[in-house]
Length: 258
Image 1 (tube, rainbow, N blue to C red):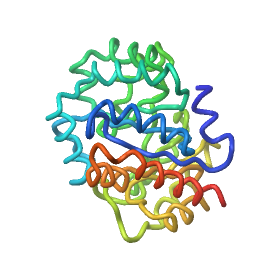
Image 2 (cartoon, rainbow, N blue to C red; image 1 turned 60 degrees about the vertical axis):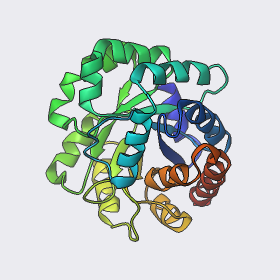
Image 3 (tube, helix red, strand yellow; image 1 turned 90 degrees about the vertical axis):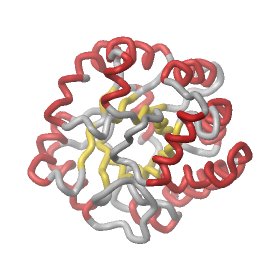
Image 4 (tube, rainbow, N blue to C red; image 1 turned 30 degrees about the vertical axis):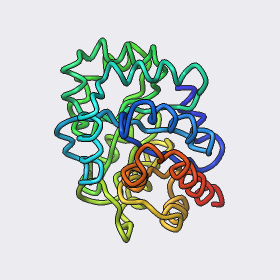
């Protein structure tokens, strides 16, 4: 919990997402270290999966590229062991229930602790079924992040009361992907969360420009950006690191001025 607390300790947080193994685990390792140096407060690492139901085409394609390159859960853990020798940035895994249970949840969460993973985000695990993973998270000190969406409605208070670390607010309906306009739903959802729990709230899904990030940071504690970064990785491949670093620095500056 200590590292997660530091994410929001110095103002608004910028949280970039990348898919582990895209374009390679070697580049992923470099991206994690360099994004941390560029100001990322928490890095969300996607574990590639063949059926990522919450993802749009950009991140689906990244999953396919990573899996085609031979990326596996064990190799991701090995990569993080190397990262932790030099980099202390907070890290959250974004994955689906299937890879965790196929791997063995006890072993998965134990490896999370041993490799310095701070939090777990599982979009296809409903709030009502979090008991499937929570005992393992508690056993190994990994924070299970709660998600809320515009469809959560009267469940938001209940989810917020039990939330730990921070609440991931899905800004709009549908899958991940860059959007022209970010709806006002997130602002209202955060207001409902704060009515029952003064916990940090980070907004994701659709944010891609500094202007959007700055606008969201006016009412949110953190801004999560995935597809826009994955598109940079797709465009530049093995040469993506300096381009991603420049983007992360720009977006961090956009949320910092609030």
